[in-house]
Image 1 (cartoon, chains in turn cyan, blue):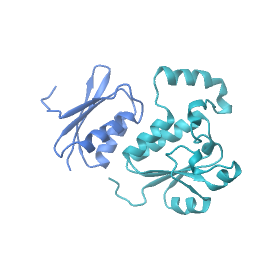
Image 2 (image 1 turned 120 degrees about the vertical axis):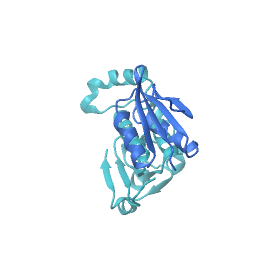
Image 3 (image 1 turned 30 degrees about the vertical axis):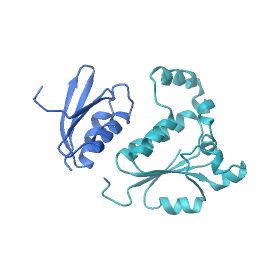
Length: 141
Length: 79
């Protein structure tokens, strides 16, 4: 579908709050729908959000807008907004999405690939991520 | 309503951005060349996103018709 081989979007997912995870997953879905190859590099709290089953209990919300947290959670439930992890899985069905875990964070918290949701395909270092993302757009969320 | 023969339609009115667009992509992928696919969407973003995708994927936008509280996006699979 894509005209250019370098039609790619890379996202450094640092935050593990639900609002930002949602933003990252929707941008990923929209980009894959438009034919971009998307790579997510999970680091620190973004990686912690992908620990197995963490999505079931994670209700963290951005501190700077915490006064909205309750209303946002209620609205998402009432309007049946898909969970951010489901949105990511849909994006993976539509197009090419790679989800990679930061090696440093894995070491810091003694994590193995098996401790993460199966959508995460590999552990990688920042060097290879930067190399792979060069030439495309990169977002930090 | 002009006489367009819609091969398959999906009701994505409960779906949020970019859900309806992704639904159309699924329909087009599963269809045969020449099929006409339609998606119902209430998502405001669809009005820009769906025509943009159809143009980029080089299919044909047959119509964007108001339907009840939504819009029916109609696309012909051209290749």
